[in-house]
Structures are given as C-alpha cells and as structure tokens.
Length: 75
Image (cartoon, rainbow, N blue to C red; front, side, top):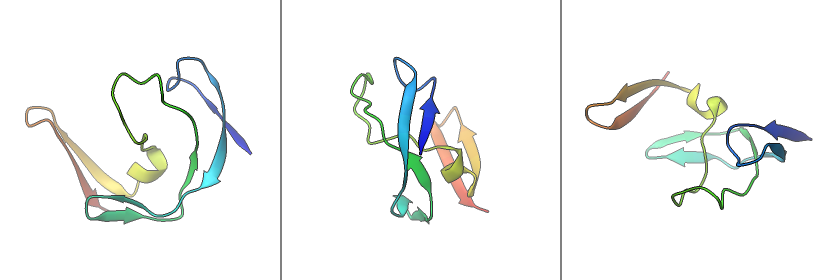
C-alpha cells in the first residue's frame, strides 16, 4: 500500500506505508502507528522525520510562539 505525498517533498509522489515501531519523543511513546517512508535529502536542515497527525492526535498540543516551544500533554 502507498500513500500520496504532497506538500512535504519537492515533487509530489507516492511513498510506501509501513507499521512503525514505537515512536518516542522525550518521555512520551506512541505505539501502533502507520507511517510512510520517503527521502528528505532536499530538506534545508538535517531531520530524522516528520511527525504526522496520527502521532500528534495522542496529545493536547500547545504552541508557545514567544518561548519557541511546542508542548505535548497526553490526552
């Protein structure tokens, strides 16, 4: 199965969907996620990946622009 990617890559395309191992950010772990695999070699800074809505929906998300912080609180 593949997922169409738009907005993330320099050119739209399809990426294979895979079951991800548990994803850990700080002290938080989200399991049973599906994700896509794609090269981000063109990205202007080095990153390990992009977290999608299926990860973020597990949290109440607060963005503090002044402090330049994104806070994740488990639901």
